[in-house]
Every structure is written in structure tokens, then in C-alpha cells.
Amino acid sequence: MDFTLTPEHLMIQNLVRDFGQKEVQPTIKEWDRQQQMNPETLPRMAELGILGICLPVKYGGQGFDYIALGLVCEELEAIDTSLRVVMSVHMGLNSLAVLQWGTEAQKQRFLVPQAKGEKYAMFGLTEPGVGSDVANLASTAKRDGSDYLINGEKMWISLATKAHHILWFAKTDPNAKNPHEGITAFMIDAGTKGVTCGDLHGKLGVRAGSTGWVNCSEVRVPQENRIGEEGEGFKIAMSALDNGRYTVGAGAAGIIRASLEASVKYAKERQAFGKEIGKHQLVQQKIAYMVQRYEIARLLYLRAGWLKNLGRRNTRETSLAKWYITDASFESANEAIQIHGAYGYSDEYDVERYLRNSRGAIIYEGTSEIHQLMQAGYALGYREDGELRCELPKYDPKVWQEE
Ligand code: CAA
Image (cartoon, rainbow, N blue to C red):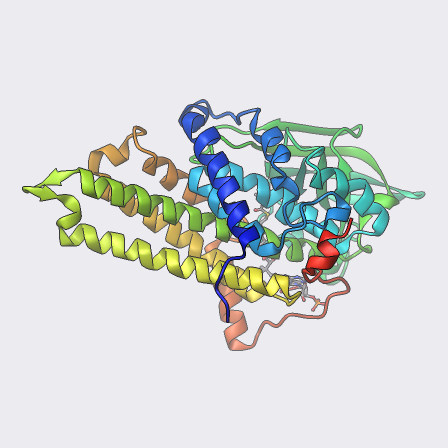
């Protein structure tokens, strides 16, 4: 077993760390206060190649592996969750689903501009009335000649007003005996007639991010935009979540690290009872737990990335990573506030933002409760992974770097 990061991994880690610290950190508090996404963020991420990081060069990507994607997410979220969320929807939930399930023509049409950062991508699964219970979503897609007419509402959609392509899930067979089998996936251009969208404000965290709603009213979509076969939508959504959850878990490791670094710094500056607070054992205990959580987080997400590189199914491992790390990031941010005392409770320090930002990830891309059910299901033998018609392609450096 080799835990060494390659020179390419270290290079991309440094590039993203540098971008975060020099370009994002100085103004992030202000964007967070204003509840706005910095308009420079997406174009800059595109320019740096991050938006196509783990996609093959022949599809406009950078040719790095899935571990690199995890490292990028950790670095981005160590600064602010809003940047990691971009990777979760644009890459994890959308682009990797097209890489996995799309036809060659769809890869050329959708993936290439997304990998180059010319187009941004989002994921339309959650609805006003459906979050965890995916199989019972309400949006519909009805055949009309060689097109589909799509209706429905999607809610809590990251990049709703910013992205160009949405991977939309709708019922093609609302009466299917097994509701999982009645769902189909479509790529919809956000500029299509009948698509409307808007932003949502007032969230607890990720305030410098873009979250909104997207509605479709009689939206005509040609069958060339259908991803996979009719009825394969549930599996496509779940496999996309295997990748989205990976980015969320890896990103949350960044919050743990940032909480730890901020706590160590503050514990050496602040004095109480005649000595720096780092010398007090109860502060040390909190710091020790952050170290422990960070190390476990790294092992869990890197294992999931390693399985992806090998082209092996990683639903269980990714779910475990996402569940553990998001819970651990919330606990770490909370304890970082405790170490900072009253200062941690104000936005003078970053730790209050870490706490607010960490909370959402315990809900989105599978609540912790859903992940507990999954883990128990695997342990008890009630859940097992079936065969898939299309698996996420195994990382092969030669294929990925081929022009
Ligand atoms: N990959 C591929 N196929 C999968 C799969 C996966 N990861 N997981 C399940 N499947 C397949 C199964 O093999 C099964 O196929 P067969 O019928 O051929 O055997 C089929 O899908 C049904 O699977 P399950 O029986 O496991 O389905 P379930 O009803 O037990 O549901 C669930 C499982 C765990 C509750 C699931 O619905 C789930 O994960 N819910 C949470 C959804 C979620 O994460 N929502 C978040 C939305 S996105 C978001 O948050 C982003 C944002 O921007 C806000």
C-alpha cells in the first residue's frame, strides 16, 4: 500500500491552495456577508483548469485522476465551502455522470465545453417535496414524437442561476410498479424555452455560493439529450451521488484542517490563567480530536478515490466517508469556536463561517441518517451493489492524457 501523493497531486494541491489563499481568502468574508457569489470565481476556476481536473484530455479535461479531484475539493473547502460546491455539482454530479453514462456524441456536446469551463453544469434531482426519497420525485417527461416534454420544479439547486446545463431527473413512467424504474435522466440547456430559475437567500451557510430553484414548463428536449435509457435515471442519479458525495467528503476534510490550523494558531496566541491556552489540557484535547478526525477523514476519502481510480464500485466506502467526514467537520468547527471563545462567535475570525458552512453537508447529498441506513444495510446483508450497464471508467493515465 502506497500513501504517497504523486508530484502531479502535489502540484495541483499547491496550485489550488495558492489560488484559495491569495485570491479567495482576502474577500470571502465580504461575499459571505453579502450572500453573493463572487462573479470572478467560476471564470477563474475555469482558467485554472479545475473545472475539468479529472476528465480525459481528449474531452477537454486536465487528465488528472480522481484522487486529484478529492485533493482539489479539500483545498477549496479549507477556504470556503462555496468553491467546493462548484466542484460537487459541475464535476461530481454532472460531468462525471456524462463521462460514465453519456454517448460519444453527448460527451462531445456537453462534456467538452464543461471540462474546458466554457459551460457550467448543475444537477436537478431534489424537488420542493422530495429530497431523500428520490424514487418518488414528481417531475415528468412525456414523449412527444422524437422529443420529450418536461415539467417540474427543482429546489436547492447549486449554481441554479449560473450554470448552462442541468442534469434533470423526471418520471417517464409515473405508474411504474417499481418507482425506481420510472425515472429518466436528461441534459437540459438552461436557455431552452420554458426553463426558469432564481436564487434562494437566507441560508445558514455557504452564503458566498449560489443556490436556487429551476422550473421546467413544457420544456421540449430532443431524445438525443436523454442520458442513458428510459428508466435508468434512478441508477444514474445514485451513481452520480457516489461521485458528488466523494467531493463533499473530501471537501469537509478541508474544514477540519482549517479548524485545526485556526485553533492551533489561536491557542498559541491567547493567554489565560498565566499561560497560552494551548498549554491547558482541555484545549489540547479538542485539538487532539481535530487531528484524529482529519487523519481519519483523509484515509476515508483517499480510499474512495483510490477505488474510483481502479474502476471499482465504491458506493459503501464513499457513503461512509461522506457521513463520517461531514459530521466530523461540524464537530471540529464547533470546537474551534469554543477554543476561540467569544471571538469565535463573531465573524472577525473564520471559524464561525466554518461552522455555518459545515452544517449543510450533513443534509445534502444524502443526510447522515440516509448514510447510516446504507451502512447498516451493507453490514446486515440487506443491501448489495448490483451490476451497472455503465461503470465510472477506471483511471488510465495513458487514456486520460491522450490528445
Ligand atoms: N449506483 C448505481 N445504482 C445504484 C446505486 C448506485 N450508487 N445505488 C442503488 N442503485 C440501484 C440498485 O442496485 C437498485 O437496482 P436494481 O433494482 O437493479 O437492483 C436500484 O438502484 C434501487 O436501489 P435501492 O434499492 O438501494 O434504492 P432504495 O430505494 O433503497 O434507496 C436510498 C436508497 C439510499 C434511500 C437512496 O434513495 C438515497 O441515497 N437517497 C438520498 C438521496 C440524496 O442523496 N439526495 C440528495 C440530492 S442531491 C443534492 O443534495 C445536491 C444539491 O445540490 C442540493
